[in-house]
Image (cartoon, rainbow, N blue to C red):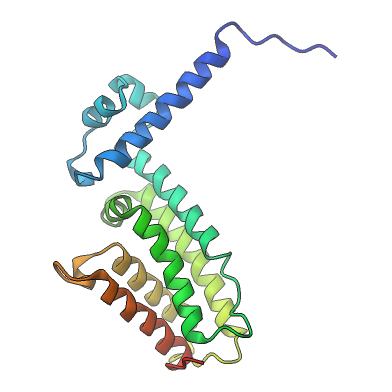
Length: 210
């Protein structure tokens, strides 16, 4: 069995391409630390990444496409942190379970705060990013609804669990992204997170703490 030779320079070209693509992604992450996503331009991103505009468009068709990649990574991390939404353990109280669920999400939002804020705004104007979030939310909601239904201690405030969990999930996402409508201006977000945990606890377990 013969092996076809790799064209001279082929591996290096692929490696250089990977580096340029990663440089663009990192440039957006870095810029979001100091600027809003709306203020970012392709020229600004290209300059920060050390890549020509033509190079940017070789890998991405818009700045939204870069953000979509970053958001997809964050969603994968969130699902890992929530342990695939494992059922409540026998010795885990509803309050502890609610804290685990919200805390896992907060860990992702906290580590990627500027990106998640940008994403929250961008999903209203970009279909690709909105689809990523919709797909993820549907998966999250389906899993949590299943967990609640098999939890003998659950006391949901409505029989319409999908609608209830969807509302709780959306509230959690907006709170953790520090949307001022949910956390206020210049407010301590930790207070808002505590309220979100209580919302989950009261809405799904009737406020039980054990």
